[in-house]
Picture: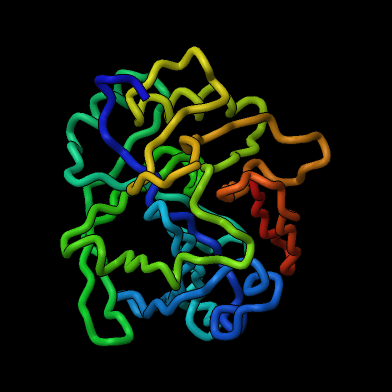
Length: 265
């Protein structure tokens, strides 16, 4: 990251699942990842569970409650099942500066005003945050922002037990975005502009994580051209890293029209 860039960190990645899978996570999740409790969001449309990592990031398993089509209709995550979005965080989002940088970039991508969000934890604690969503582009192409109002450790309650995983995963290596050729340069420039880094390396932008972990490498957002066989204009893969860096079998799971894609590095 450029020395004068904003201090943004990769916060969490959103994995959309059917409601029954959220209630009873399948073996292809639990054999590799430890799932922790979550809760219902304040809008009453979605519910989540968390996969927490030592580096302070987390994978948010999310579903529309009872797979209710009315709750799904018009929602920004009304998408095929799989990895659908990712978020950055910062202690204090300078919204006006973010908007100005993007305006100057000429990408046509910006961000809407921050809006309040929250949920109640299973033990009754209220969580509050602000979310800042991108405009001029479909969700998942660039990060949204999640900025805590209540202490972050309430929202991301990492412990030794819940951040220990059968796969040995210690944190996030970042995201891989496979995009159509005509969108590659625009999205690469937008993400680099958000992070305040130069765009010479158009296919990769380094990003911080909330906590430093021994033996971990810096996370990054990678972009590459989608394959000719892909039927999507955007495919997201969560990249996880392990302490010993031994390769683990990737998770590639078809759910109806969607694919869950998680790799290990």
